[in-house]
Length: 386
Image (tube, rainbow, N blue to C red):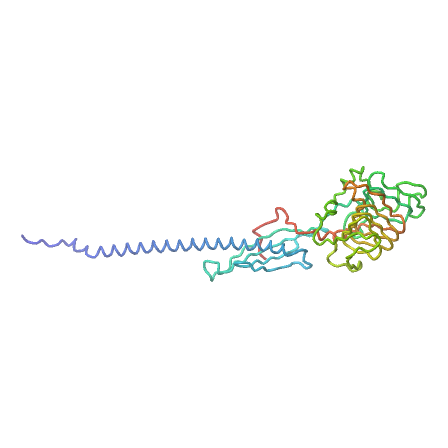
């Protein structure tokens, strides 16, 4: 038996296995490299997305930090502050958005900047996100029926008192000069030149009232209606539940100065206007007690001499005026009627009196009750950076 020679076709296949192995290895290497690159890209995208979310959290935290630390609007706008937070920082800027009369709308932008070390690639730029919120700073508010509001009877003898609802600050529309319950205001005496119109006898028409409507006393309705119309939490003020921590509560001392009365220069007011509560049956207020802010007297009050007050005066009992007294802002008397108490008649007849509405003094007195208001539908997370 003789060996047959290998056909040429089989001889040409030598080394094919090695070539196929190398080709498969190359294909496997390409697949692994592609999978690795895809995994890396997805990881980078996920970490960058997480970085953006964390930058968003920094921006939102910046808004909250800014408002928590700012008790009053800054005097100069725009105002910018930087807050260092875990993982990055927030740069918050407050700008004027719109000013219309006394209403100023502000926009607060916060740019969260995540530290670059938090990124997939430490050399990459920091992740940022900007959010914005429309805000308004509002002081406390008070519904003012008139420059002087009395829950009870008010007697006017002569023509020496002026109750003016014309805003001395010239920022708000006129209000009534005087508001009382139905048939609670009486005038006697008077004469030509500014007292009771026509002079002589008694009546309810008085020429010393300026304001709206028609320079006449504003009728609050019957007593129960008048009590409901005066929207003051007098019970909360008397028991202290509606008072801020800054309120100074003193005991009434009759015709003497209550112990602890603060020193005030009415001609040079401090930025912070005080709230003083004089608690007791009766307090006489003379020139040495002139001041500004919110003055609360839970009992009767008698104004003696040249007593002046800028801001708001709230009296629980009756008011008696002796001497030349001025209240510029707004004044209420007879508020104990809201507690069911009988309040005696008030009289501002002796000496010259001026109760003048002043919206600036009212707003300044109420500033301690103010705060930031976030406007509804006023938050965006796509505010352009500039």
